[in-house]
Length: 258
Image (cartoon, rainbow, N blue to C red; front, top):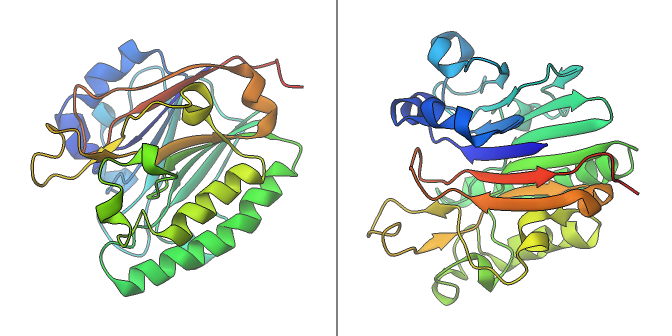
């Protein structure tokens, strides 16, 4: 099974840049999208590619904001859009599609870069989400949690390591939390398959960051530990560009969990 994740930075903008023309050739079985920035009623057939079952969770708290989606070639048995905390759920940051014993989640963590209030909310989300993620690990289900986590793990995940130590996304507390998730059992699929590689999934739109490859790896697929043995390959698609983020895909060999 191939799972692909992308922060679209506006699904309508990404569509105009050719996302849905490119997607059929990627052979993805499940596509997780974040920051769709639209309500489902605003989307037309272009945004519902042939052969995919499309499920959306839009932000209720603010128009043209946040939003996540799961597109799948197989019809999900069940789709969930609430984790029980309205401050988070209302921003359209979670959707989970269940296929038998496998759950695929599209998750969008807040950024704290706009100021202290949003950074404080990000820390709240991180603390609360720890329990949610622990619960998933203990659920008996297999999980792949895709999305824009807005946090790097280490020096390998960011070009300008030293100068970003005081910036949201690279704060010591954020990195410690992200790495603690790995200690608790979650598998960083990219780092599992590419232990020493230095590739990025997001580049600022300022200062020719993309051309100079001054990026951050903040888009992940975290897998439950039973899926580790089935990891086959992964890749970050730098081009063509549909967003300030790049698509990240992983191939899983299912049915090999131990």
